[in-house]
Every structure is written in C-alpha cells, then in structure tokens.
Length: 258
Image (cartoon, rainbow, N blue to C red; front, side):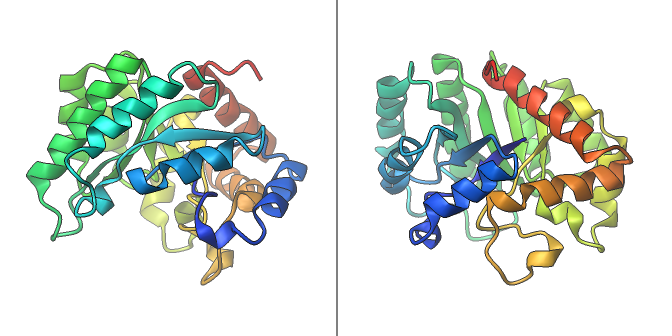
C-alpha cells in the first residue's frame, strides 16, 4: 500500500525516522509521499526524500501558513519546480488549498495563492494535493476554472457525498485516513461506503490525524495497514482488496509502474 500524505520531514521524527520508515516498509507500506507546507521547509523535505527510495515529494504553500508566506515564495516554488521537474522524486504540487475554517486567514489571499499554484500545476504538468476545510465550493470552482491537465488528491476528505462526487467528476482521488476510524465519524463513514473504490486513496497525515487507537500519540505510516483494515471493514471488503485498489489508483495518477 501507499501512504499518499504524510510529513515525515517534521522534527518529531528526527530521532527515529529511519526506524519508522523501516517498520512501515516491513508492514507493506511501499511508498510514502511527503507533502510540503512552506518555503522554509522545502530543503528539509527534499533532503528527507532523497535519503530513502520509498519516499516521494510534493512541494507547495499550505494555506494554514498564509501569514508566514512571503510575496516571493511563489517564485521560489517555481524555481524548485523548474529545478526538479524531471526528477522521479517530485510527484505533485502540494499541500495547497483553502482553509475557510480559520477566521484569521484572509480568503482573498488564500484563493490567489491557491490559484497561482494551480497555474504551476498546468505549467509543469503535475498533479495537485489539496487541503480543503470548509471550502469545497470555492475549491471546486477554482478547479473548474483551472482545467488542470492532471487532477490529484483531495487530502483528508471530510465533505458530503455530493461534494465527493463533484471532485470525482473532475478526476480527483479522495484521501481517507485516521479521521474515518473514529466511532463518532458516522457521517464520513457513510460517505466512504458509497464512493467508487477507483477514487479512494489511503493516507496518515503523520504525525497528525491519528486513528482512534492513537489518541494523544504520534501518528506514522506504520499505522496505515491497520487504518486500511478499519476502512475496509467499513466499506465491507477485504483489506487486501482496498490496499490493492488504492495502490493502483495512485500508480495511475503518478505514472508509477510498481
């Protein structure tokens, strides 16, 4: 299986990153995608993915850190994308998107930043990994306007069935992880049950978004197999069937052969 979204470059993994990766691989997690959040950490992220064959990079400007982003960061992102455009480790632009839940983040600035990065996705022919919180309508509108050559992943999808189908019509995959394992997440679980398997991918968002059995603890890709089993039980299929299908979905998106 593949962890389509994690942050293994974060300092919380500095003391045991190699061990976490080794345990994850031993449990069947073949690839892990590390999503970027801001310019100051891109170098750290790239050094991390180059340290292990199973790691891949997405580079982007996360809306949560809007206040920290500088006007020149978009051009710096373009420089990074130009530098690594043919590198097999670069698989997407992300984590980008909109967060309308946080009231202190200017919506107009968020939309501008998001749509500029969508233009980069077209320019460099890369998929996108999208963060969306209380912003599905605007993100859908921006995606329809952008008409990307390749789609991508809606990270940590938490919307309605109707919103899910809007993304699917645009060719997107929907990321599911620890949030859907919680007993109280019945609405999200009911959405998951109705979705076509061809548009579902697995993720951990490590070290965040823990499954219910990790309450208060660090999440990591080594928990993906148990998350997969839990989500498969919700859907009503075997964990191997879900692992195989979600892996195939990501291989098709990124053009990976194995």
